[in-house]
Image (cartoon, rainbow, N blue to C red; front, side, top):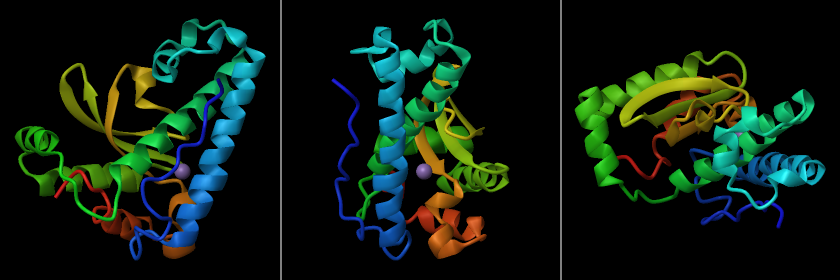
Length: 193
Ligand code: MN
């Protein structure tokens, strides 16, 4: 059973005006779709990966016996698949607040606003392509960013909130103005107020 591109739970236009329809369409179908295709190619070449949980494979990527080339392809495309599947799920046209997560954030960062400021800084200052993350790291909430499609699971952390800051995520609407995209994104992040 190969990996599949998941359908969105909402229309491509549902996150307008914060994320435009064309960006959503290209991002989901072409970018995420491309990661899934290339991930399946790595699995096809390495049958020992078949039928395993992708998260578990990512956590143990160094002990899978992959060639350097296949390991890099697995990190990029398996990470791309995991990261984007998560990204689509935490967004939506209507707020659906995760109260427990929100309380944890308040008790760790003082307030939702100060969390957003710290997370926004991580997202703004990530040089080049990558992601900003709120993760659970051995029971502790942490904010950091990762390059390319590196998944927090590579460090053994569990992603809770991830923001894609690759230019493909915002360039059609925001061009070089990544901070404007980040500011608008809080409106479509459904899990926080
Ligand atoms: Mn992306």
